[in-house]
Length: 412
Image (cartoon, rainbow, N blue to C red; front, side, top):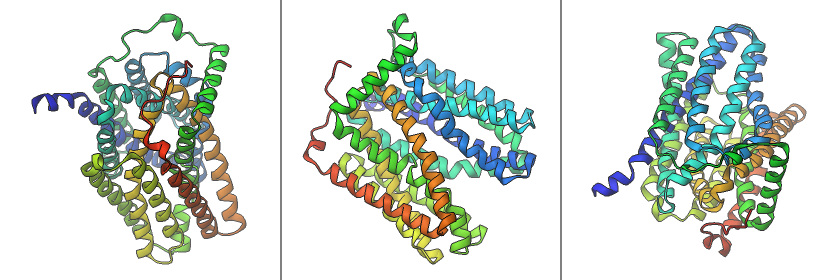
């Protein structure tokens, strides 16, 4: 029993760091929006903040995967956490929109790097047999951040200003970096020559990812269908960008009712994560990905076709409940299927394509709402999502899925 508890020492420490950072991210998001609105009194200036993240990813993911796979992961995570903390702490010192945008762009670049490097470190740290349980717990932590983050931001606004809340987020990132400092160093041996980047090195890394993709089409199909069409916001983000307008103008909800809907979504994620944590070991990864993804798209479709507060709430709860299962399943699949020595490059390069699609789909969905109607755009996007996830579900039923363990080394 004691040895079992000790084996979870570092995973629990890592979950604590992830939870602290996650709550801080919510505080940062809300506080930054409020601060920008106070400075400019322009909703357009606030909406510009949401375009910075995918643009930063476009500029970063071209080369960041090559850097991630060649650097010490623990040190890189600490540097990214503390760098973001330092830049975030500078935000309240400026009132120029241009300077704030530049600082947010730098923060977004660091964040786009942090996600793939943390995934590589987690994969190295967590043994294969514990990954499903860990990812279920992480989903629970993330859902807790979804609920506690906005509440913490509200509490900080009551006792201080948006600037105070931003400083609190910077402190949370400092704590996250300190937690990472306590984690084991899993990259003991790093060759100096491997850390040198060049245009030729990046070009060869892109070719390596394409070779891996061709040799493992089944894995990449699952990866693309899920990450592009579900969690990583190709259709979901495009739909979410119309969410407030749809709820208030089509369903005619008040602001307080819309706020309650967001709380319902948070409750759905939390309950789904708890159930998933309890039964994670009994549910196969293919079921978590396939059924969870279909559940999310059905929830979106119910929300899109809603004509009342009750059905809209049911749709919100359903999609967020299913999301907890789908997310944990996909993370487990990703960790078990992508070679850890090239995981940074795969995640970054496909993240680049994902960012392009986010921009394109958000624009197309917005144009559809302008040409047709908000509800038409939301229903159309939901139907496309449902068709995509049905294809994903059918793929997960293929016998090959059950035979995936560690991907065979291609000598890439």
